[in-house]
Length: 328
Image 1 (cartoon, helix red, strand yellow):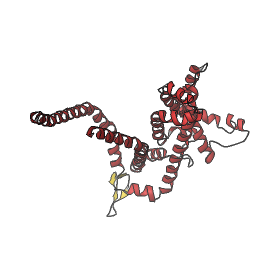
Image 2: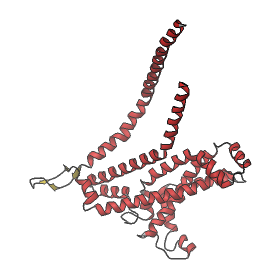
Image 3: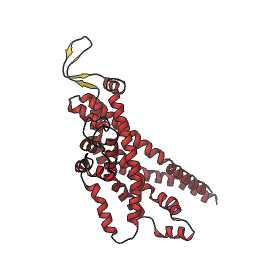
Image 4: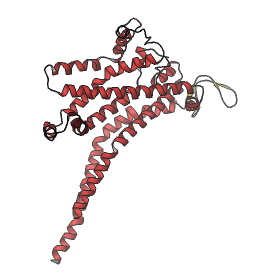
């Protein structure tokens, strides 16, 4: 009996060491397989980000140095470009563009999520002509953004179709709140099918038996949607919303084509950076781009962190339960 216990105690550490070596080998293999992808990302993403940040620390053109002499070319100015953006002579323009970018992101993504989920629920139902409906939904998303902007610019003209429908004379393509509303309408029309298609893919993975069991238990259609459909389609919906948020924060081409550049009501951070670069002010343009990059990274991190907190908690509870069973 004593010999058996001693053999068991000796074999347990050896087994743990074997499992540890296996995990280390798997990690090394995973790192080796991921190395080419990480190298490409470092060259394609990492280097441009660092180069843009470096450019934001310089100013190009004529200026005065510390001794009062005229200096031409690139001059190291440190954080002066960022200071001018937040509290200098360009602060008002920056905060206006920042507010427009945030407004367009919140408004368009919210409306696109509601319409996209509704479109997915309709396309998921079995009815005659469902294939034609699914194909027609793809049309707005397939149209290039510049062409879509020209199309909606024609619709929103003073004598266009939109004013004829509402029977009011509204200057949609001028500066002001009508132009913001025009951009929101055009953007929602174009990109709602994107969310709808991703949600539809999630709906098709839900087993039909789940809904049938809930229907037998007396659950209404609203209860089945809230307690069954929405939780099961949540992963696909979160991915769609995250992608749309990141895309909307970089909005440039639609307001530029539909309304025009240098319009205060629709000027976004990307338009502001483009305007600075067009006037050869690369330092301030890089500062705007760097700030936008940080803003997008922060939003993405908070979005994933806040909505993924419950998932992490469930995983920890599952590990604790497994450990408790192992000890028992």
